[in-house]
Image 1 (cartoon, rainbow, N blue to C red):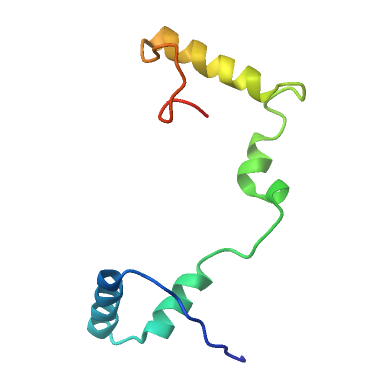
Image 2 (image 1 turned 90 degrees about the vertical axis):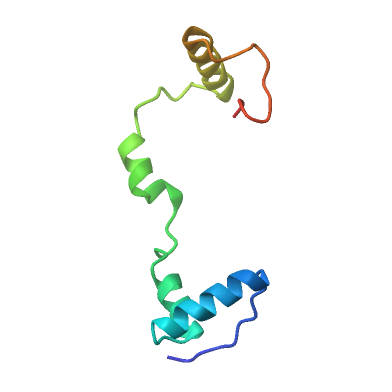
Length: 92
């Protein structure tokens, strides 16, 4: 398989950790990165993803994002964890 060079910028301390890990496990950084990247599934359209297939048809087609927000707000109010304001930590 043809190979190409890749430049990656990562924090120095992370690189030192990875180099140490690679040395301890008798593997090159290239092999380590390649092994990790091969674990990422091939890209597939989102509508074919298993989670989408499992959830398809659960909600009516006419449900909007506002309906979802209203549902979350009601749920938070009934559980006592919502103060009535959307903030960076409690909104979608």
